[in-house]
Image (cartoon, one colour):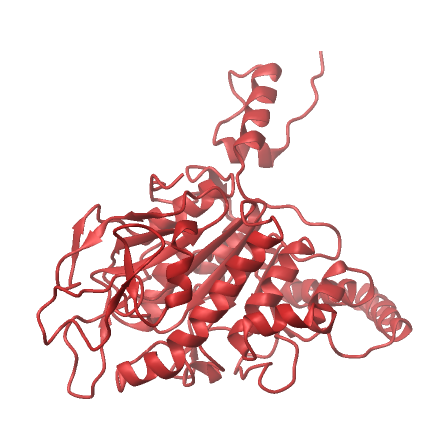
Length: 446
């Protein structure tokens, strides 16, 4: 007797095959997978440059005097847990946070470190490009998430990450294909928003003031030309972007979400009058409009193609952190957590804060801290993550893990689990080659 088909996505989520399972067993697995899902959406906040763990989530008041730095540690809302004195708002939110203090990898440059942190895989030898790369976390999440027509499954904003003018690899869909590249979207323009990027091919600004009939006319004309000329595989990515842009301009709730003028002015003020805060506000609005995963590449201000307001503090570290970087970030991320909580959506929205690496225990001759992948910290909140906890630790000087050492792959596995995605699931590239989607193990944070 013919039995109804089970979706491939259900099989991939549960990580099992069809062989040997009856239909009732498959349906039970499907129901179990749905009930286990904790988060409906994810906001990834990427801090390009490498935020110092000592001056954020893992202060070292007991370190040697020439290592511990200029800032004090303060108590948080969680007994026994301390943060840096210059993130006092986040200290009040510690009961919402899981702080992972024992992450480590071996990539000492920004390109390799970002690739490792955002894909959960070691950076390739040489320079892998585009479809040879591993998918970013944002792309991987989007592979398992559905969205309404005209709504992207993944958005990245307000620009991509660069190192010395070169676009860093690993920020797209990789071997998943162009369909899983995040849509690049600018924060609504107008000083100080918008941002500077050296990569403009796929950036989208929905405030184009195009009339509906003009958009529909352009789409119709293009479709007629493509039917006559024949669409080429090389244009798959561009075609998808144009179609998505047209859909969003014409009918998607994303269009209204994008217009920050529709937001309560008091909420906009809460996030701060800067590109970091307004981008996080836009991320909340986009997930609320049905976008499953949004990545915010966040500095204090405009990253300016990798040369601007970022966390790569080789010089004047303490001045930059105190006067600019930490206050802006503290206000923005705290506003996001407050906003999600007040709207009753924190438990179904996972917030993941990721960075390249930590900073060296030793302060250099220029008053800065250098790259340090040997140990660093990241945080998770919402989405079923149990707050008020710290996983792992670094040693007294913040030089290496002291307990429960873990990897970016373990962090990815934890995020995937929170999103109801089996980290052991296997996917295939366009040539049929199988890949287990994550090599790590979920951390016990639930």
